[in-house]
Length: 144
Image 1 (tube, rainbow, N blue to C red):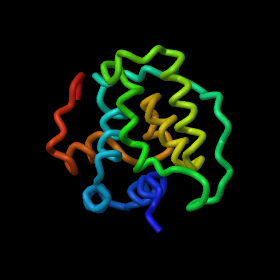
Image 2: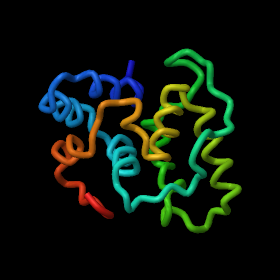
Image 3: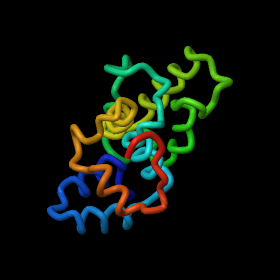
């Protein structure tokens, strides 16, 4: 069974050395993971969904059952950042965000909520420095 992104981030977080973290980041690299890390660590990426607690119903389905995976929903992430989709009304954007969260396993929904507030580091020991080394192709906007 494919790992949830929350499980991948936990593996990276649990790695003891920077070299191990970089190896895992490269091993599990995907467009969705890179997008989430850029959203979290790049100061020029602005969340278009309100910060703080999100009023959604957590998906209680066990892993591998009735939910979508963040890896598949990653293509929607652009809707939730400034400049991603300016044609959406704020109301529609927030509805889409909640629908996506409710479809995900609750651990993956938590990842998205942390990322939108740039708080991934509060839950996982992953730093911008490690991400920059693992993915040297990322050009960070804002301050580095």
